[in-house]
Image 1 (cartoon, rainbow, N blue to C red):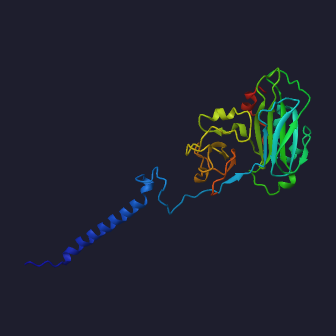
Image 2: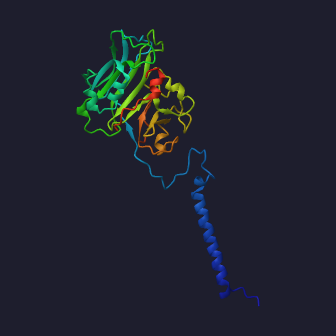
Length: 308
């Protein structure tokens, strides 16, 4: 009577209680460590909790574009003078093709770099690397006829010197091709750059004027008359919706991210394809971390300015 001692019959109940407490403690630890994942905390927080496990990321590489070509602002454009500004970080060859037939141009663009440099339609001149330098291109007036036309008024090609192509990555740019429209009596559309093509070492061809820009401002961006930082001037990053978009993703070519958001993603937020590399389409500081086919005609480009 009155004894408070434990007996052997009480031990199973004690073990069950201890096990329940241990299980509750483990569940509490797991819950606290994963609050950010399940959405209890962390959403909208700037100081998110550090994670011990980071998702695997691909090593994305910036595709270096060594050339720039832009028309000088507030300068008249005509056959008697097209004033432009050119820069290059590498040795290169440049040529002006006046009255370029559309089909011949596309055949040339889908060739390899040696084939482009050896084209009988082009008379290349060699130049060393230099900062921005003004150039004036001129020709006798051309009679290209009324729209739809079969020739472009002017095509300017900047191509790498083949001596500097031995160590290029497949995505690196080997040539920049600029198509310029010149207004005349029969085609009164405003003079300016219709499109710019980037020829890559792997043979692929990308039209900078037809990058898939996210947001409603994409149409306005495609209507920019001049190149050189103007492709995505009004569009914002689709992730942060604060900074101007400045990165065009490859291979999908969606222009939808800014420099700050790009390192945080390994898949395109538009189409979910894996990001392997990217173009810089806006002059902006980098973030701290860091087929040949049968020359298909780009109908969207041709129809844009009534060329066929």
